[in-house]
Image (cartoon, rainbow, N blue to C red):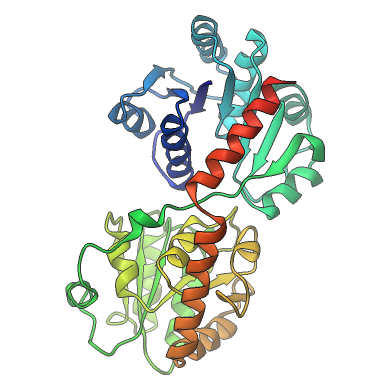
Length: 359
């Protein structure tokens, strides 16, 4: 099959990681993939690095009719079998173009919020796309509550490639680089430094843990200064490290004892999935896809978002029981290897493409 993938993001976040895990798998299975991307975006760069055919289209907003026409021209020239839309803006611009050209389209929904029941959404999910894939049961529920028919939507989990999460450096070497004491327990968190991720709650919780673990947060974002001021105000300058954007997550995961994801909202939580694949127990908020991903008491613990005292107790109790920590970490790794591998996602999308083409 020939699949057109439309992703108008300029940056490269968890969603784009999933897009290219899918594309890589599709190409390995003999399919042809073309990527429609913003010029000079990281998405376009990733596609070109893979020697994929790219179509550069400036997509300035949802009502950029020139972008719709340019995508339509590319579709008309290439005549792909199906169009895969990877973001909300892609749904509208790429879906509109696919409708114009009579080419079936599918969508992937990653956001943990209800689809708006308005004219635009009804046109997307009722006319532009034949099927929509949700990356978690929580996102699928939001689709249904927003009026997307169950027969036109289904669950296709996001996945992780464990082979890409093997540390390149020994645990001790990485911990020394981070300035960690040999016996000091370490909690790792990762994600954009924004309010939705709940890192303020995590910092406040760390201040209450009597065993004085280290907290390392990998990521960058507008809340960085605010989070550091919070840490300073709580006297945690020696126990909180804001690591910035990192390209060595496998090494960081290998150096940690526990992973925490205190999000206030989350479609799934790829960082938590990566931590599970690396064999770490995960403490996560009971929100969105996290509540379906993390099995409470088995692969980690689920907690109410923003409940600082509960998070402090859970961190302390988990770190105090190394045997339980190892058991939950091993169970999480097994869960990933059983249900969250790239080949499983690729196969599911192949079936969805074919159903869409068959009407």
